[in-house]
Length: 315
Ligand SMILES: [Fe+2]
Image (cartoon, rainbow, N blue to C red):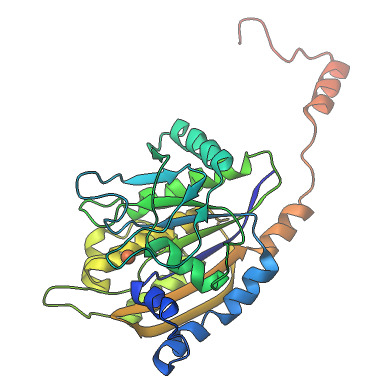
């Protein structure tokens, strides 16, 4: 059976990708950002997921303004890097996992989440930058990645609650997949930033840090947060953080926070990153729970007392 072994969130700032591609990661400005992901790379090398499900948003690369799906699941065998205006990023083609993706599509759609199934799609920095941050810059990405694009660029984006519940539906789908796979779910985007208008450059570290606290310990506090609060507190593009709630919904209710990193700024954005694993305490408790009594024993006792289990006329 497949299982979700962790959730990771990180910002997906395009300038981080440009710093990698232009070999500027050792410059002091960028070293501050990249050094925060060294531990994550070590963690990832140890964890070795079989599949990543990456929740991200397309920035008018795969979908133009002519067509904007709210939730689009990549079911293709591969996803080439998109040309975002200066040629495709020099990163490996993302290999998909069509079998698990199709299984998720079936399970989630029959659970009444109307995903768009995408059989051909290019992926932009929203997906490739987080892969770089935790996998580095290998010749091939070390595992298949299933992209799930969420609309956060055209009003109205989905609510945080909807995202959280989609995460739960994805969890159910993964847990019902028969192959033994270790799955890590990524939530990307954010944190606070606004790229245009009178409030351009807005960063709200207090809001971001409280968001990280709640994501880890009390996600229900975030689930009902209205869009206007993201916009007011975290800037117009801060709404990307609803995607982190898909990741959080896919995890257990209780999680252990394995790692956190926060720095300001990268370009004009606050960079936040967190790694969450299923709670070890919760796993121990579940293992120690006494087994439920078998219904067969109840039947035997009833038979011994000659009490009919179903009385006539009481069905
Ligand atoms: Fe973005």
